[in-house]
Length: 378
Ligand SMILES: *Cc1c(COP(=O)(O)O)cnc(C)c1O
Image 1 (cartoon, rainbow, N blue to C red):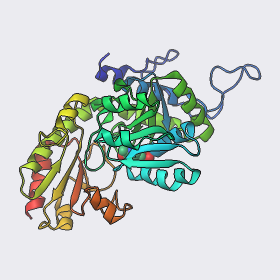
Image 2 (tube, protein in one colour):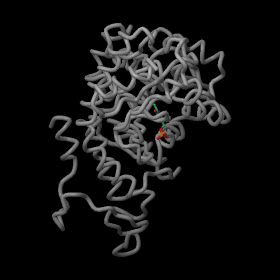
Image 3 (cartoon, rainbow, N blue to C red):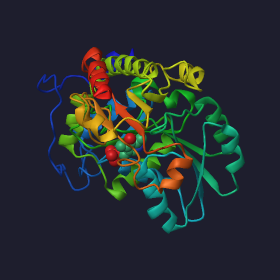
Image 4 (tube, rainbow, N blue to C red):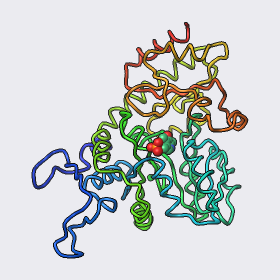
């Protein structure tokens, strides 16, 4: 089954009623024939039929065997550490990780004696060097936020396997339409379904997908024990929105490419970051491990442009955090998504005060380009 078909046919119509769209089982508990004899469900934190349909959907579109869904992307990420780490362990992560994940590492997990080493994982020799005898897990994003740096998944998996480490990839920026880390042998793939899978900026949610049964059992146990599950209505909404992922991503990939090209040829954008451009230093790797380059374009605005005036003049790009919706959004990482990182560290990592990040939507590309062009001129 091809990806587009999986999105639509991940579940069958309801056997009893013929309903084409699955029911929302908004129930917390289930009757038992006799004490202890259930029909497979006893309490919704543990299992719910609507959530299960959404979990099977995620497993299929990630080319995995199992998936678990959570109340947010952060809940999914933290569930990995609760499930797999203990005091004294070390994790290796990339140095431009999502701000919420960074906060969780620094303010929560360090408190419990877990050590985190941040390296530039786009150079795998840095990963090899950082591994010590306490290292248990490698957690990366590819492409990263906001500089769209890539990590070679095939080589990362080789290193992780040779050292018996669990490999985790946060795939939120690519979405499963453009990249399937499990195919490269990655152990756990993370999605903030809030972004491209929901795609309409309506529901917060997170997902994990895996291929191995034992790993699934551990994560599943802690999904229930920790309790940050996606509720039935949110699961149903994400399933419904998720079914059009391929249509949206196809358009988003194309729009983002046009915008990246337009910016590259505009002298008011000093530098453009987009893995689909030939000028991206890892374009060859992007071609190997991604089937499309997704909808995030970052660029360095010339300092002669009045930043706030530029943002205010835009009609179709709303100044807002988040990404992955059908509407185009624009943000200034240094002042918004990455403001919690000290200025010095930010600049060392290449995030200047004039760096702009765009999440491209499904509007007509020519309207978006005209909008940018007008706002840059005025
Ligand atoms: C948004 C995001 C998260 C967190 O997801 P929430 O659903 O907001 O909790 C994690 N990783 C990346 C890359 C994200 O963009």
